[in-house]
Length: 530
Image (tube, rainbow, N blue to C red; front, top):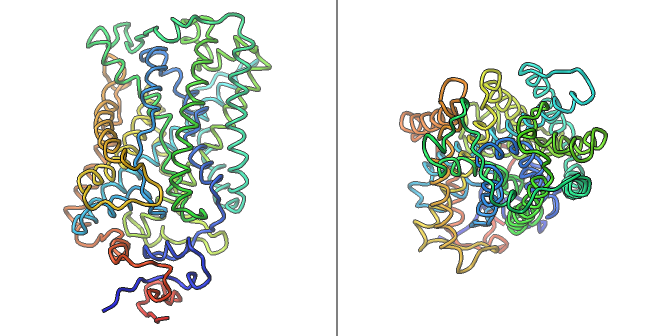
């Protein structure tokens, strides 16, 4: 019997992207109007170094200080990526299924999908909660307003709802909003760097920026460097850089809406990380050089060291402008985080991976967008932010959760690439001879940070300072493994049809290998040969 691949009618029209998607067993349902720039822009916007640096700057100053912030960023920012050309919205969970033996594909896909699910929800939470806190801080400028936890949660809810509405009714505008976000981040970063350096009355020394160690992890004045060692503080302090440089899998999740996705997706990931790492390092160093007094900056009445640096350098009116730049970057970041998040959930639901998958896999016929998973993403990210009402370390815990979830989902397919190196098939974009050593290094690093980021961040540990990342990660692990053993292993097949198609080794653009599916009924098995 000759090998044939099941594809859609779109191949006959020469649409290579839809043909490639069909080769993997899916039909084109989402609006495909993103180019390379927009694909890059989604990851660039979600990495959002303005958001990452600004929202975790206070954490960095107290957990290791300038020396850990600067050199931790340099270490973490070194791109360590292996990429594969499988352009579906599923991203990592699809890669995991493709890179292991067929009999293990469903389990690998299931576990990877749930860690990515956790990371996606948590990163959206941390972005939007950061945006809400900065809005609260800005509202205190030249006013008597004093924000509290309940006020911040209310602002947080408004931010999430606004981003959900954009992703629901403005899906046709996302391409253009993406372009705005790219320029907002690029110009905004340079504006902040130039403004604070040029206007600062005095500048810190290079010794302060590159060598000063600070341990502010002790609630009672006794930090982890005393109770444990300075190395402990360094380990938990690199969360700032690792969190800031996450979320780049958005380029993969948007691949079903990107033209020439097999190449544009990987390029979008590599360029977004490279540009973000360089710009982020420059932004952070410029802010550190512009600190006027470390103690007053850390204990600022605004609650945000970044805001205090702005006030000390460009004064109140200038600080308002720079805060608007930061808040705008955070809002764009959150908007496209929900976009990416919803696409991952849609893809996972399409393969039966989440409860209620038949409901969540529907694409709105009018907007060509997975509206139901947009609001699922909004709802879950809001719920994950609620512990901030009673915890002083809630934000850093959420950043830990997002970092662990996302990087574990990145690490599983990379580990499978190492384990099954002999059967690994490169895509059109690859790292050549560096692929194996980079992949091995990445797996070791991800194992390290997964352990590091569930460690307590403040001393002593109590109900207020508990790093509840370990709780959230534990729940996902218990659910995913437990539900797999009890039920999912009997019915979840993962993207098996894609694996079968890949294994045929047939050129999908070869008309002799084409079989057209009648999609009038999604579950129909009727086929006609061409």
